[in-house]
Image 1 (cartoon, rainbow, N blue to C red):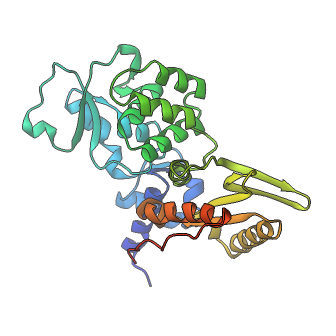
Image 2 (image 1 turned 135 degrees about the horizontal axis):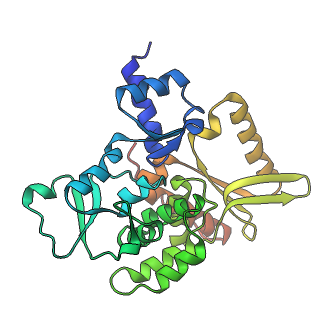
Length: 304
């Protein structure tokens, strides 16, 4: 029999898997209600609002930023806004006024950035959605930045035109990447897992559509990422696909149907996308090599 501690820790891992922010509905796919309540009582997850759950590492970031006379920003602001991210920040990301000097002890547990923020870009001690996305787009690696931008669009916290216009008005370090992120951001991505997988595909030269509807004579399916031109489906296989035997059967049939109708299907686990991107890149590159008559390179080394 599993201990209560093991059960509540699993709830925390699910929240982390879902990008640090999730809902009761998604947690209930894999966890019984009593386990979620025990996790909340034990403090391994925090419920900041009705039906919403976050990790405790992110729940206190606003108070920490205020104690430093700073503004919550970047990844910490993204989680505060309720957006899922690739990597949940352990330390609070904050923006500090250029004239503000922080003592050595005040630098503990924060990731400081120095800038003078206009009043209209700060709301209740947190950077506004547009400023948050652009800060992340300018500062973070491409895949992490795309995950934030996709999440913000999915939450309808801003429009794509607002994002593109804001990025085009930027200058200085990171502005080029910010414009790239704004151009490629897509709110149809279901979660950061899919966003990071799409980022890897983009960097391998693929143009894949999130949540592509595949309609053929006798076939209808929705794939995580896909290209009608290449007849390629790229799937981010998360826990929600196999939460039940019925779900597993439905998923098996869908991939078999795609194969019967001449579609290739590449399926990647969360662990490979987030922890072994070299393998994902190899698979995407090798699929193209085989399609174009070239011999794929050897498998990259794996950690397991």
